[in-house]
Image 1 (tube, rainbow, N blue to C red):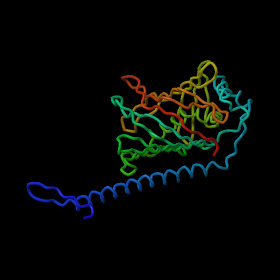
Image 2 (image 1 turned 90 degrees about the vertical axis):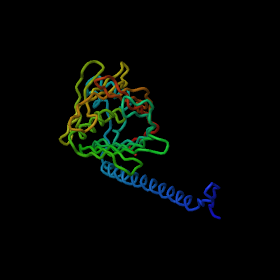
Image 3 (image 1 turned 180 degrees about the horizontal axis):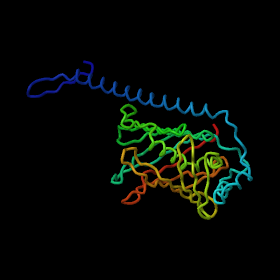
Image 4 (image 1 turned 120 degrees about the vertical axis):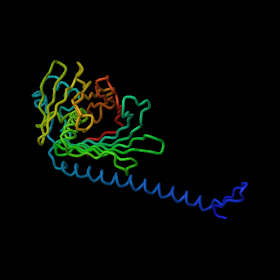
Length: 294
């Protein structure tokens, strides 16, 4: 008897063949749905990445000369020199692979594991970040952040299928995604020379970058070491897009830096929200792979 199982009870024999077949059929359908959901999510995010890449593939990459660097405020010029950008061509695009640990709220005890990929363009400032977060052994949540034309779009789905967040093009999400672009500038340091970014020296080792693009503006503060390496970046961002959401300080602190293709970038960072009750470190991220202009 195929898959036949019989159990002896006081009431006699119960054939479980049908029940077992139904269970296996349910599992098979469930797995197929999960596979199709993940495929669909990756298909559309990859199309968006291809669109960003196509929009920037013909952009000219200007050489980063010492003269251009020295036109910037001293701490920024020292940083760009330290990164090794002098004598190289501008970074037009970046591909990143990241691993990380994430918390969604301060009271959360255990960290969620995450894997992410990100694509960034510079001449037309834009990025797409897609992540997979392992919340339970058999449950993953996927997220996608898009910044394009000065507009933001955030999507979060359970198992790549069930949308729980889908926010696009409102004042808070636009400002927050632009601030993220500024916070992540050390991954594409030549963007400091972009015409849409203006710099102001604060003291010997810090400077403020103000970005104005397509009707949206934002600022971030950069703290540098005496040697010229970036140590900390902070900006005011919205933690969520609710009606009562307030601007909070978001701080990225460099844990480790590496030289990739001759360019020094942060490869391990912590990201924290400065809440009324104190610092909430919610993300520990490590760059596993990075490629420029590909």
